[in-house]
Image (cartoon, rainbow over all chains, first blue to last red; front, side, top):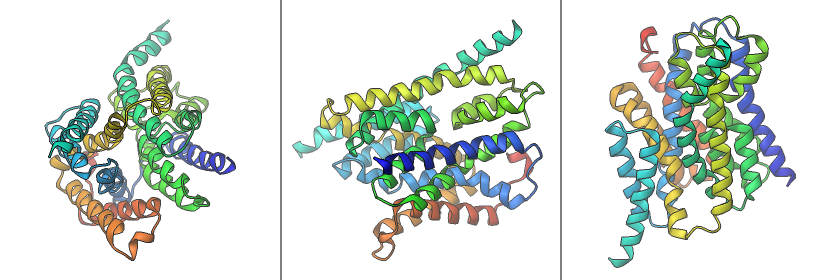
Length: 103
Length: 234
């Protein structure tokens, strides 16, 4: 239980400081082109590293996970919003795992 | 009265974000409970951090005892983007956005709240305050619902909902990777590196928090070195 509270303090504290400190203290623009570029690319790199290949292990059947992945990718490329992409991915996984036992 | 109008305008702008957060945090609650956390532990995490990717990575790190440094490192790497958003939004905040407001409202700087606030010509504190209400409520109530229902829902459904967060990540990344080739490069490097860290015998031993951070830093640094972002692109 102590472990939980320490972890929560680390997560909440670091997240809050990362958000509030620059908001409160930094008023000038960051000058270094490298740091500005790095900050531009980092969100996409993080989200990708978290998703691939972990999404294929999130579901009991890797094939169902793959269906969810492909559905999300196609809809996202078509410009659908966050909520519809997320729900469609869930739907694809659900339907695929229902059908799979019959093959 | 003008200030209250700003608050309610913000509140309204937060409706779609709140609804979206509810559906995604539902799967966070389900996932947390399936990992062995209690529903209230999941709710506290959501109340105090309000960050999808960070909480998600945090859950995995929390499963291993004593992983405090990897946990901190993964949080900083994943959430450093909020610092960039905060810096960017601090330039748009109007004169009434005093120090106290910034320390209080900075807590709610999420990707979607930032995106809506950045669409304003000038950001007023009351508008921003109104904007944060429903997303935060949606995030917390979704976690609560998922945490409570997670143990009741059939396995197939829980299975399916556990990909919701990944779906949201894909929805954020894919359109930008399609439009900006350097982002596609960063995405490719991050995905390749992450696969290597999962499958290569030597690298498999790395805690997942560390390997995610490492892959992201390498990918972003390579992209930044090869394709510096021009002023107007940001």
